[in-house]
Length: 201
Image (cartoon, rainbow, N blue to C red; front, side, top):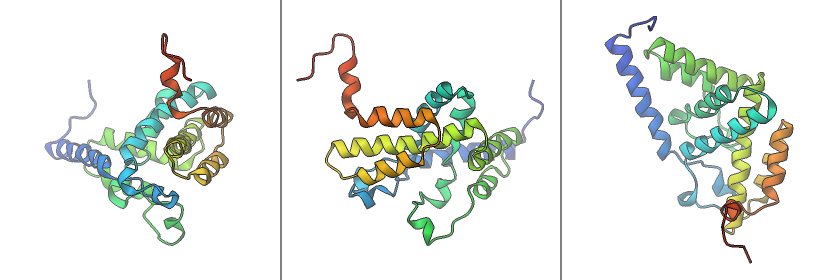
């Protein structure tokens, strides 16, 4: 039995935040044009968050962390970008933006308190980067960027610099090993590993 019966206002605020989360489907990842990838061809923040979450589960399992907790951190790590956009390392050198924790506090204000607490705690843990789950989630964020750079490179874009920078930022042994494995294969190689798949010539 829930400990708290939400008010109509709390339910409405929670529903509004769920609509807001959907806006990430239309929020582009803005760093790719620096690597020659046109904005029209770039992924959205929602797309990035999805594979980051899957990678986070893999890293957590490999590192002995809690996969479910890591998945939560990955899912929510860019939720604040609905309000401040996707800031790149270049723009952060010149533009001061709100701390993700402050944005999150505004986002959950008025929502069901248990939901607000869960989101706030996850964002705080990710930003602090101190737990094993947070380290896996932060590596998953970088590793997804590396994998996407490999995919773009396979279609002709020059993303070697991004691949190198993302690899250098990885902290866990498992993330580094997955990065090394990825750079040694073609992004579409998974299709050819299916049982009965035709041989690649």
